[in-house]
Length: 292
Length: 276
Image 1 (cartoon, rainbow over the protein chains, first blue to last red):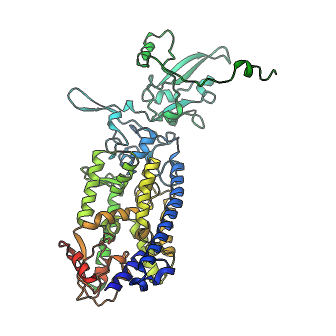
Image 2 (cartoon, rainbow over the protein chains, first blue to last red):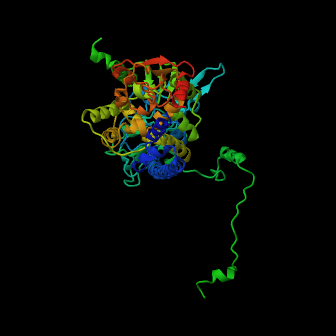
Image 3 (cartoon, one colour):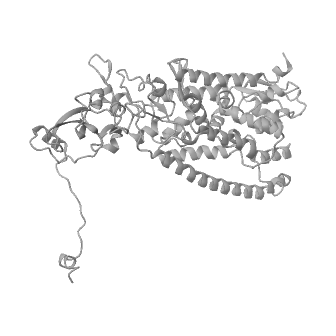
């Protein structure tokens, strides 16, 4: 039985052809051969793991860097979302408008994750947000779009969703040319909050009014209804992920003549220390460098 | 029973089970059925019982996401189901890629295609470890991004895209490069289930007195290394790598194999006695 066991073990390890007959030496110098075989296998394994790991990591790293994706409501910020999404598609199945899609290989979106394309099929902002509570891993975080009221009942507020931000190209938006178009404004589920119309003098004609749409980032949910409604050939109002579309002003820049805005200063740290390394050179030297 | 039916009874049951699973998932995604919604990564049965791919959850943990209580419950349900009861039955009774690789295996046998690369079956544990390391490094569940299994079941339920290419690659790999190459050598999900299935209850049992050592079982077995006892000793298949597919049972002309419930220690003791 000893030999049988020996052969069996070799077989189970699928020893390389060159060492196949090592089983014969099972009783004698097997220790040396086994050690040699083990070391070779370990080296091969390490090599394969390294090469495979580099290719694998390279692919995943490249694939996850797809920044222009619109996620379902209440999605965590993109890096956390990618870590938490298990790619089960239950949100996609729950969407009554078929707006959500689960990315298939070949789509320009991380594989298996849910997204929507605003121009084709935007988010309708259902009041009961059916796509969010079904998420099994909280990659869609219900707490971002809900509140518990006094009686302890969970209330859904889809208007708190921040899927993206609508951005207007003023050079191609025909309303900014002076043509009467308010397609985006009229279709906006948060009309007069997320999109308002501003009246401006048409300096080009000197006679007319421009009724220009304006997006307000503190209300826009990024649902994309405006992008779908836009009448220009390629939408002149379109939704971008907020992380890309928005800047960030420092807390110390205040809007003048706005008493409320000063409140932001209360949250600011009292003192900020900035450390700028001082040059060790004499100013007289380097200021006159070119002159000399 | 018809002889052909007898020699294919588990195969027919498995193909029915695999197809039914996909059908229910498609119904859940497209036709409003509520029996089971989601896919094989995570799903919910009757809008009540969550099921989670425990290996995907493990990768998510490595990636730094704690997921949710529901995902944990789902993973525990699945680990208990396979680890305690059914063994690595996911691979042979649920996974749709099994139909693809079995087709490749069938063609290999039918046209006596042999040879190819020699890679150790333990490579799957290397891939498993690599999955977790890369998940931690990249902050995403690394295997889920390249898994041809996920591309197939996700694709069937929600749209295939270019996922066919990955499935075709697995088929060709199994057909031309390595016998049972993907499922038996590379797949870390299979490796994961093999590791947790070591203490399962449902096992293939062998009766050595009936065995004539015709080796039909090892010829058809996708993991033949789990059958070292043929004609030598009685007992259960001990290795977690057995997928409980039942092919060995139905092809055995001597009725020397059967499904049984593991009685504590039987197989292990018999194995030790037989080999010492």
